[in-house]
Length: 283
Image 1 (spheres, helix red, strand yellow):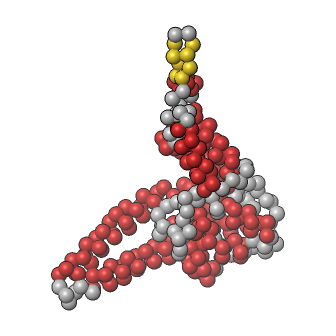
Image 2 (image 1 turned 135 degrees about the horizontal axis):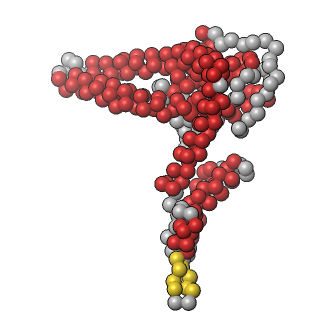
Image 3 (image 1 turned 90 degrees about the vertical axis):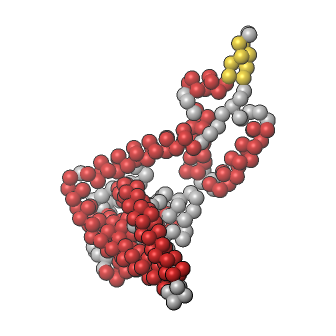
């Protein structure tokens, strides 16, 4: 577990009000605006949690821990991401008041929701609703000069109404569902299991990404008597994709332990790759 549970409970319980939920909705409405390569939507998600963290925690140490918790990688469909925001708000409130859940479980629930919400949002909003409304709008534009202005106006109104409704329900219903979720999972001990299984799933996914996305091999050979031995074949005999694995572990160590910038490492990787290929060390 990346964080330890702080058992020091605050003197007064804090409850998020409807006003707080509206603030969360406003803060998180730009969740995709801060999207970047390394953390994806995490900066926008963290911004959405500002009203929660500032109200639920009194000590600066607790606030820092909570902000750091939500800077972890997060990526799903932008509108349905509000459901994760609502659930996380409920879990942060529970943790701040009772300290009876593992804080890692907050991210575990987020990770568990990312995939399903992305599939639903991309298929319904971007794959179905948007093309249909765009087709209707284009038809109105081309049908007559009298209806040409109605096309984009209708598209804007319908898409805005649908997406804003989804965002509203995501925060408010997500918060309600999060309260029930934490209570039920805590009683059955499912929260700790979910945290464990989410960590295992993350390791499996990362391992699959290494073998499929990181390409690195060497053309080096050496001669033993009359036999020419390929260094790459020898390494594959020990473990397939050993070089990509070692290089990925090196990047992980530099980013997490030495706090080296990911952008700097990407530039260094590009330069190192060009030099090693030119020298014939890498293929």
